Structure formats: C-alpha cells, structure tokens
Image (cartoon, rainbow, N blue to C red):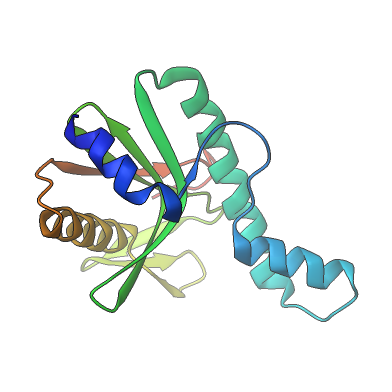
Length: 164
C-alpha cells in the first residue's frame, strides 16, 4: 500500500471525498437555513460565506476536470493536539499531498510588513500564515502516524477582479 492510500484509509471517516454533486460547508448551510426561516443572520457574514463557497465550487469543478490518479478531499476540519485546522482542499497524489486554500475576495489588498490590508484600510488575515499553519499541522499529524510524505501548499485566488 502506498503512503497516500494509507493516509486516505486512516482519514476517510473525517473528510468528504470530492465526487460531484452539491457540497456546502456546514457554516454556510446553517446560515442559509436560518436565513430561509427568517432568523436574523449577519448579512455580511452570509455574503462572505457565499463568496467563499462560490470560489471553492469553481476550484472543485476545475479539479474534477484536470486531476487524474488522485483523491481530492474537500472542506476538511481536523483536530490535532487540541488545535483545529481547516483546509479547503487536500489533493492526495502518488507520494505527496497538496493543500489548496481558496480565496474568492472581491476587494483589493495591500501587503505591508507581512500583514494584509483591504483597500478600505481594514486588516485582513494573511492567507500564507493560514497555509503555513495548515501544512505544519498536517505534516506533524502525518509524522505521528509514521507517514512520511511531503506536504505542499498553494493559495488559489479565484476572483480575477481582486488585485494585490
């Protein structure tokens, strides 16, 4: 059994394999249900979740067309050593893993001293810090299971209007 198959076998209960159909993350699903029932929800947060979902859906559809001989895991939330980490996608391909963090922001960014700022001046989270954290925790988790495979990471920006 190769290392990637072993990873899938050990983690298949905690992730959803990406095989067509509709996929909504649990936060968006809960917010949409509350909104449909007339419960007051933050419209800014709902819009943010919808944009994120739209970006992830574009990546999902592209991955289904181009990624062969691999498994694609989506919307993974994993706890390791008391810390939670969320990843949009993990591609398991031969003897390597790639984490994809999808960003579908519609605003422009400015990068100052390793900090991200939106065009309105509000500070945003640095997606590279998020990706480094996810890669580090996944590598540590794999090592704890005696699985030694490289973990790569990529930021996928899906909104071509947004500029950095």
